[in-house]
Length: 332
Image (cartoon, rainbow, N blue to C red; front, side, top):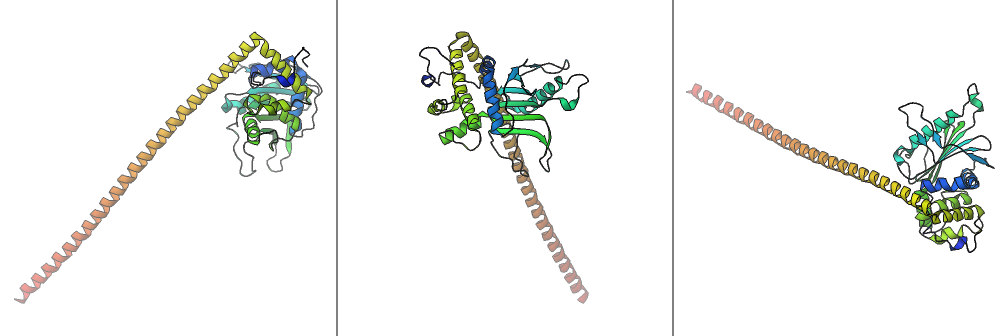
């Protein structure tokens, strides 16, 4: 807790507080005070009623080494080992959501394989947990009509399980996806933290701090710190970090990088969408033209058929006249 004279958690201007969704600040906060990471992880697990309570952890090297020359080097925001040996990979991912599902699974497989010692027993290998904070719903999650998958879930907890009886196949892989945009939207709509999408109240408070920039009513944020020492400590650290000129400059640079990256992706998606709309319009025009030609061809065919019938009728009439003339000639 900040013990500086005159420092008061309740007088902090949250409009000036750095955005925890910026991975640079997110990582810095928990490296400075790992106890806060323990607090956040316990809240995440409690929200899904997972019987796991962390007492301590160790921050590890965030780099997952390349396996070959063509492989990509993965850099995690935070990589930690829990007191029971479980590995946890944590990422604040506010950009590039299209590849995030594949990226988290790839990072999980690397981290899980690195800890297997030569000659070790696979069954003794501790689980590896991947946690990703996202700025929206991942496109890879689609509604499953058979199992009635919930839409726009704030917190998704994914494991490998049997699709028939839903029994857990293995606890080696555990993935958590937390949609910060859906959370902020739910809070702004409710005007409070009383939302139905989450179950653990402390987890909700942590998310409120992380997403404080997107929450319209700042009094909601200020009220959650009244009895939460961990959150007060987090805000105090963020306030001090924001007062350091070099840290704030690095934060603003990273914030700009994320903004321009997302903008470039949005611009690209808009161009692709416009091209798709133009292609669809051209396709519709081509189909309409083809339909018009088909209708014209059908009309011409009907006309030709009518003319043919008329010619047949005239030919029959001519034949009748010829027969009549022949008969008259015979009578003479």
